[in-house]
Length: 158
Image 1 (cartoon, rainbow, N blue to C red):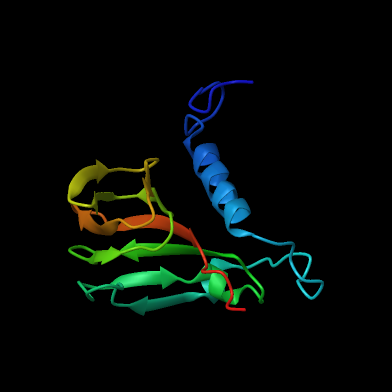
Image 2: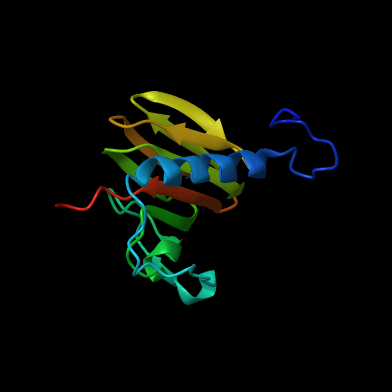
């Protein structure tokens, strides 16, 4: 088995594989029971069918293009999977999270914060944010910041 960051023949150095593995791990961890029989076999969603312009969440700092991809998946679903493009100067303001969350940068540059610790992000980088942290992300530089955001849905109330 090759290390996750081994770049043999992979243009992205295997980073995309790492993100997909993290997202799948989150989905598996959040699924506490098998899906009910009413769950479809799959949902195939074109992001262009989910796009809208809106202020980013948690403070409405600037504007963004939101691709609320998982919103188009029929219930039941155990996770959120979204693409967000933060326009110049925009940010998802600092907010507490009650689950693990993943930010994967597709293009542009940004700065992420978790419990006061800041880190620069650029394409191919991932921020894995932990349950209970206060997190946020800001667009930096001239190019919009395009990222994938994924996190588990809270368990259904019984």
